[in-house]
Amino acid sequence: MFTIRTKPVLSVLLVAALSLSVLLLIPAAGAQDGDSTRTGFRPDAPPYGVRGPYPVGFMTFSIEVAGRPLEGAIWYPAVNPDGAEEVITYDIGVGDLVPPLAAMPGRALQDAAPDTANGPYPLVVYSHGANGQLYFTAYLREHLASHGFVVIAVLHSDTLRSNLSATTDSEQAAVMQTFIDSMVLRPLDITRTLDYAETLAAPDGSMAGVIDMDHVAVLGLSYGGATAVLAGGAHLDFRSLPELCAPDVYASGLTSTICGMYGADLPGLEAHLMELAGLDGEPGQLWPSLGDPRIDAIVSLMPGGSTVHVSEEGYANLTLPMLLFRAGNDEMAIPEYNVNRVWQYSGSPSKTLVTLENAGHMVGGQCSPTVAAMPVFFPSCSDPVWDVDRVHDLIDHFVTAFLLAELNGDEDAAAALAPDTVQFPGISYETTEF
Image 1 (tube, rainbow, N blue to C red):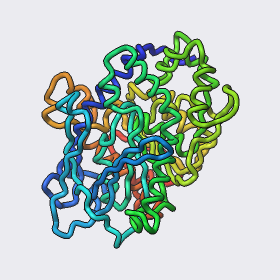
Image 2: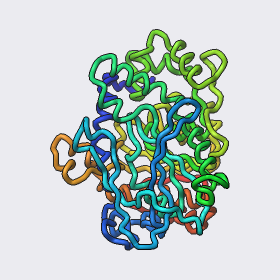
Image 3: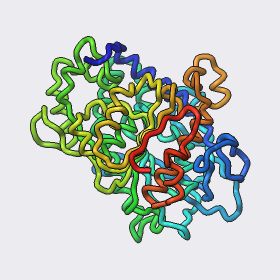
């Protein structure tokens, strides 16, 4: 029987939304502001936590794909012949609802020309956390672009704006339903994003010679980390839902939401999700993969949500090279139901697990000094144990080295992931490959 952890359904969503709202003011440049020198957030950044040699370009897109809008943003290696300062302000899109969250500073060049001379570059598709938006962890996407990757972040239907604007009971119920539905819609968004990337990379596309569709990774944080796992080939399996919905069991915010809304009709929920996914068949079986065969590697940071609804059998189908992050004191995506299961049961012969010991779920975030100084926000702007600048440097280091090794065959990057090289205080490390 699972550990008893009871939390109200709505409060879980609201806490997640508040935490994400606060963290949207991450300063993407850190110690790099106004300085072209390659540095990390701290002077002791590990080798691949140091910003790479490419200037970073940034653009947004909005298109119709299969009758549904697809919005997102792209970070990419750019040219900067005049040596312009890489500075940008990202529009969070919720300034009218929460004025302090109107914008987030970053380090990139708006609509700069891509660097085609050194391309094409491997593609990374990014999936944001629950009730999130495009620019959470923009620092990581900027960092990857500076090392020669194109990163496309897609805006899923469970957005921060829809969560913050829901005030009535019916609006909040709709937000929770969207939260549930996105479990299957999110992996489909990854496929649609890859389809869009192919049009950009085509000989007549606007990013011809820039995007390498033969080397692709999927990257996500929190609920986006679970999306990355599903997009990489794990199979959903809802046969454990009745047990998870027992009154004395709590496994995750998503499960709690499902049980609260569908406790009396779990087969009806699964039938609904199968219809959304375009699947035939009867509920109560292992699902086929919602993954995309174009994906070559997976990076999943503190995954939570739909990872609960993958069985041992469903994880056995997960065979791609995989980098996982675990927060040792994760209070939201509880490791025993989420990342621990991915690590233990996945069939990948090449998997790596980085544990930030004693860290909380939101440890990867950092607020602006103004927001962090507000007592109501401070708990979500900090970590009781970790310096968040240090965490950013470590995340940048591990993710960059992993993707360089897996997608580029970079031997130096692979060597940086060898266990005898990974000697960082507060980090526990396991790998089956490096």
